[in-house]
Image (tube, rainbow, N blue to C red; front, side):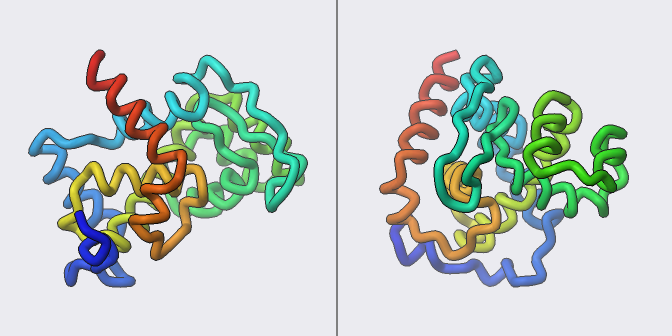
Length: 191
């Protein structure tokens, strides 16, 4: 997909497009044999922690996450978990631990450490981030973008920020995360 096609928004995507509409389009693509939610989350787990085998994430030395470390198999940063929990408040189907943690006075890192140790909470966060990053990615690329292009851009957002908008194809292609994603897809295809 060329740069101008990559940036062009499809006329079906508007600022009011819902996650449900994007997921419906994704389901249609899945029916054609393209990558689905669970495979994408498995890929992110493989990239972030070797499939949950290496969850001892380094402490950040600078930037907005200075002094914090990612948690769990998906490598969530504490600020990401806190922000996502706000989004989860509107969802009825959240794990009881997350529900109980919403009104605590824990630091972001303490909250993240608890969530990272609870598989159900971690999956709830992962699924919500999938929805948010998928919606933002499809809004950037358009609903007719290939699932591979969407997943590359979504993987980039997983590392660089799920709320990013208007990310250029050149920026995604030049980022080391894209190569990690490609290598993971190649390894998974061999299994």
